[in-house]
Length: 317
Image 1 (cartoon, rainbow, N blue to C red):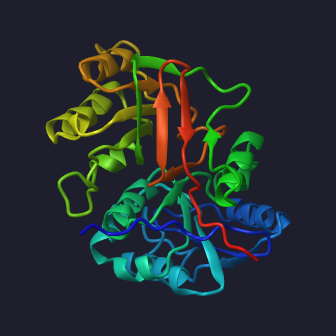
Image 2 (cartoon, rainbow, N blue to C red; image 1 turned 30 degrees about the vertical axis):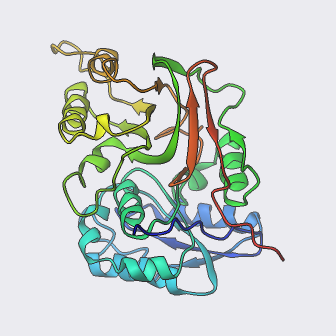
């Protein structure tokens, strides 16, 4: 029998938010501004013991980053955990994390980019819904866009159990393959998803809606990642695909290349499931927060992306 899906309790003003740095070091000034922002919204903030550590391109030693993460999950005062930033580092942690501990202490966990690998591993081992969204020393430390702010806090507060991901000024969704499908939303940063393919931390993508985005990857690298997903059978397992923003992924001038549009056509047009692109999600200031593990529906006829259930447990006070 599979694990039961767990939704973390909703977040309320006055709750304590824990900050961890599971990947690369961040700028202290940006984190300080992010902490000030969280406090201005009425939250208490607890900083992980090793948040400011540095070890090369890592935010300290693996064991210390793991200890910070697990300490936040077990601390009864902490109601949500926010990553300070991405970078690189979470794939190194996955084999050493106590997933039973996380499953027994479910709470909101927010991050994106490199945090994708950790979030997918948590889904695989715990079936805990996590949130791919703004981070404390990134968006919150530089001035969070109003749209990203609204989506994040309404989602974490459970105010949008029947929510269409749309907003004035958002780019128009484009259709690669038409159709309508629903499934559990899984995915995130493409290169980090690929880092766990074939490992015990890879989720079963059967029947899911797969969301993908990335930054700073030349077209040939995006091609290679998608080739791996296809060879692993994942593209044939999903119910639908949602492509977010691929930032700074253009070809280098003067070099022979395929465009991203040509690559997407090669991999997605032969599929028998709906595929939408240009979704407002990824390494962009204006972005939707996505609940990884919650059920969504995509529909090319409108086109729209809709959340079909609350992503958190509504706690009665």
